[in-house]
Amino acid sequence: MKGVNELNDWLKHQGLDISLLLAGIFGSLLRVSNQKEPMSIQRKFVLLFSGGGTSAYIAPIFIELLNIGEHTQYGIAFIIGVMGMNAVDLLIGRIEGKMKSDE
Image (cartoon, rainbow, N blue to C red; front, side, top):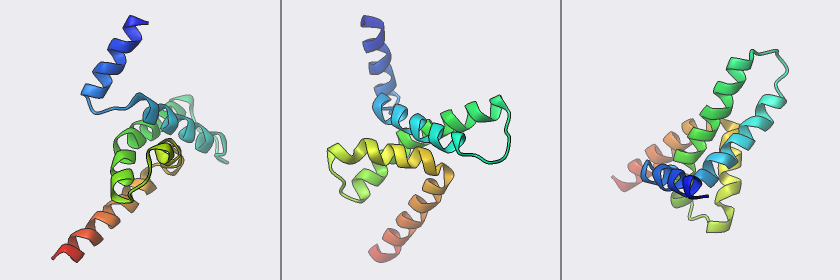
């Protein structure tokens, strides 16, 4: 168990919350499992981990911008995992809108 705690501490130091990462991976798994076109196993792994990584880094930003409660954050990470890069585009639009309103 000590190794797991050390890994979790190291990931947090890197800015990754393991819970948000896992929620994003599960969201990505849902998206990959519902793909209609065939895809290689390598592509599936890339989609799973990019969705997880995206949600681990992007979910905290959405949570702060939208004043979302602590108990909802894992759901947001899951949804971001499902959405993939569409979530990044949404976030960029939200930030641009906030910057324009601050001017």
